[in-house]
Length: 220
Ligand code: ADP
Ligand code: 5GP
Image (tube, rainbow, N blue to C red; front, side):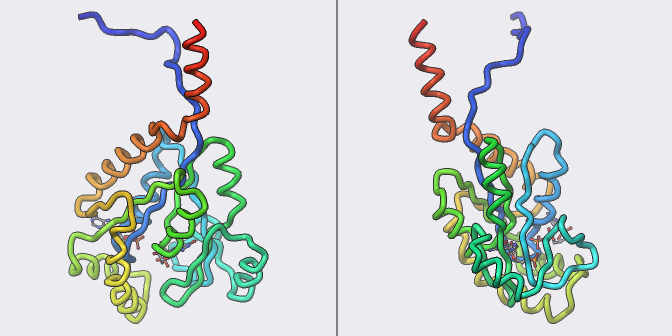
């Protein structure tokens, strides 16, 4: 059988951008997966960089991992309606600036969020059709604790607080479209990529473009 060859690029049907949300208890691996997605040149995802009142970790860069601001500034921006969603998590405020998300989606491109279940609920309400949610579970509670300790960027107190909160967070799994157990990192990453590729192809995202395409097709 001869191989099919194309002398030009295949026809691509345009679509609306989607919002991919990763959530998990602290330490399950969503920051690591986020970094892998952003480093992959074939993926074209834009990270929604959150604003937070929590203290910066030594490995974090202001403006790249978070925008670090005071509680007072956070409250002012919240009152101004700057956030698509916001929540208090582990005693700190976190929020997703609205402007970047709207800009990227208008270009028909996709936005990646690393936010908790409270924020996920709010984003889903704004545009249920355009949101894809993934919940990441640790393989065991023992491994979750080991990962938090290995990361070695939080105090013992902070780690204890996050572990205690993780039981509440884990119970939110059923609110998500997909649930993955992050045991082997490469395996989990491939699962995330599979979800993203499939979700990008879903018909409702391309409704207008397909309507146009079919109209022309049937006019032939
Ligand atoms: P989160 O963002 O969910 O709080 P991180 O991505 O910071 O979690 O991961 C916590 C720690 O666990 C990091 O040190 C990271 O390198 C490690 N880690 C992440 N995924 C895995 C995995 N599948 N196997 C082993 N270690 C992992
Ligand atoms: P961390 O302090 O470990 O970076 O994040 C703590 C928790 O806050 C994580 O569950 C993370 O997903 C969540 N988070 C980070 N940014 C936001 C945000 O903008 N909104 C909401 N709702 N949660 C966030």
